[in-house]
Length: 497
Figure 1 (cartoon, rainbow, N blue to C red):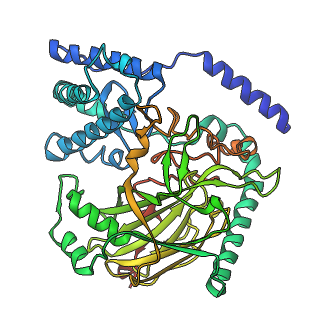
Figure 2 (cartoon, one colour):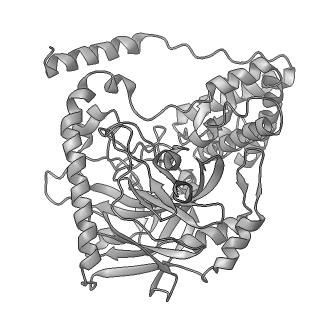
Figure 3 (cartoon, rainbow, N blue to C red):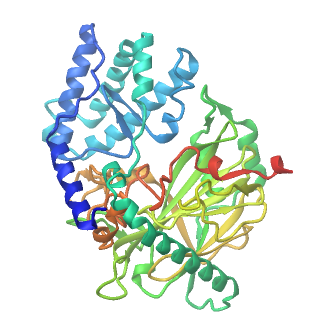
């Protein structure tokens, strides 16, 4: 039996040897037309500029050999179903193209104009050429069964766990103490929820509601009663429908506020990293997402708030540092009624689930893995029922989730903003920069815990990170954007009767 230090030496040596090897990338498609070849060369030049400038966006996975496509975990889940030519395949490819254009815009906005000028006259012109070239290359690359099979095989989004760490033996050694830590956190969270349910002291609670008029249940039902679906079964919501749904389900926040660190707001760039929170502008960032449940695609609404910091409680506090936040997500049924809420902090930490009575939890297949921590349940909720969430001071731990019909508006309000704005945040002196680095992490938000928690295979644990890059379990594997995260953990209560 090797002692832990000898195990570590062997792992590091193996990693260094592997780093000297050349990793072969898949052969790119063979392009025969002059137009396709010119597009491929132009994209290669653009990629070189972006990589040298360090503005690469890592939210979605780039498909090797197909520089005009990107996939998230949701789209990758269709790779076997959409492999045949036809409407489903075409829709699948088009959605990947659109993801690439969104990522490309963030990368281009971060470039100095002088770097872009040799390739395009402006960001708008570059995006137009990207769109055109994407169509040209998709037609040529995917015209044959071999080309479509190649894309199917390549459209796999890697997880955010370092396999070399998970396979090294360090993970196995660390599982036991981490398991105790997870169990301790569960007990602590349950105690906080019990205390919040009976604590009548509200003098330090700041209530903040979404701005704007309330949305009626009829309006929500009308959206889902008339919604069309694309060839993949994804609901097609108009911008007006999206706005209505986000307003309908935007949470009421009850924040235990004892200092400036408890005042959330819009992010802005100072002169250096990390980004700062403008608490004079209470903003919650919104994102539309999807999940797959019982053969259907369901809508998810994601709300993210940002705090300036999690203050250190003492000099050796491993969890304190710049920036903190809370991510709330609701999964809606086909009638628009909430099925389950779940939440993390932007580091991917503290994943909790709050199912309504519409769902029944499925037991964990492996008791040694983090599965679905459920500190509270919600009653059956109708369309536009408002969820109220309460956070603790300083730590911003979630301590209460409750449901009630939207009533009187609180004295303070917040506005909603598109989360993609954070990929192209204005700089003080002009230009733009994403808050996320090429590794999807928010520079300057690192936590000291990363020095001790790395054996669990997560890069820089505790650091704030980009959507699509949130591993949420130290024990086992789980990502916040897994397309089957709800389906694996819950079944319809009606089907169980």
